[in-house]
Image 1 (cartoon, one colour):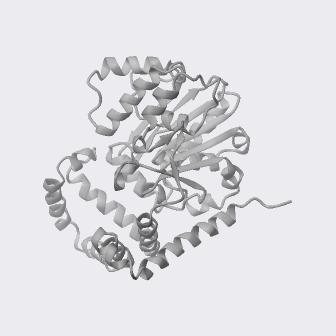
Image 2 (cartoon, rainbow, N blue to C red):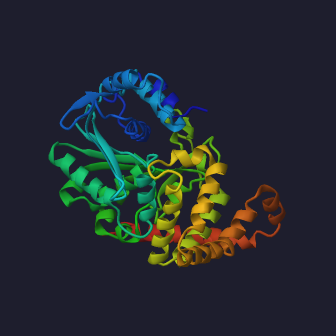
Image 3 (cartoon, one colour):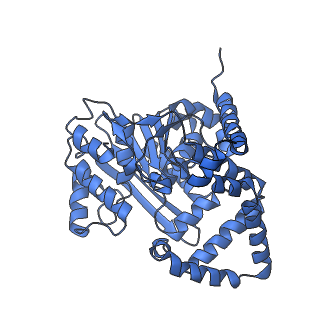
Length: 397
């Protein structure tokens, strides 16, 4: 079945002036922001998508090392060869990584033929700082959120017309957060906000007046077995997209299926995702903010024992690096080891562990005659969404 790459190639001969900007276009641009643009877009400079591709060909003739980045690299080529995207101007590229501040923020702006601007936020890259910042969001605000609000506010001041905000993974979260926290005058110019399997926003943002003002302009898409997109509080009005990936690999937006230029959607998340989401959420909700901080800090102390800068080193040799992490765990302070064992023991003796075991195919089949242990979790997940939907329902005059 066709995916985003097929969409760009098949629909690429239709100019944006002939067929309005849509969610598939947003997903394409949210993937292009992952491309390395240093050396092409210095402060104050701009380039077209076609020029971006020429730059990538010159500086990365053999593609990019990461398999997911290579998919985006090929997508950039398709966009550069299409009437729909080739002449879009890319500007205001920012890529800020600060290990000391535990932040990773990247964004750029595309100018559409209508004069509107599409602000694309990059998701988490392979830096330890970026992954650490994602987990930090579970217990405190992070610098990238403030950076996103500042970026949108600045982009609005430098342009006229409407604004689109979008991103994939953490980029989707930043688009939601920036839209909710932007000044009122900026919010009034926002046409659409797109989140593609992005973590939701925190409870305070979800309940804010700013979020209520933009909520009806938000379009959220997650794959059927979403894990990333169901983290934190989540906008209840999401659409579920069919994916050819398995498990976590569904986070790769280029596995999402399309039909006649639109996403191939399902009625809801699969059972396994709903149950696992609710079980893990219950476990996380029981953790104090201090527990969450300690868990995050300790996990990344262990990861840093393998490579203090990049995550990809860890996944290249999981068995060998697991030994290094176990060794690093044994060197932790005794009190830290005790607390970590307490939290993990709670996880593996909770319904989250029961859920994992029940979701194994053979066990799940045996349990199908008695679904009550997981049915309750499904109902809790549905009830939580219904509550959020009710809170966001516009008041009738």
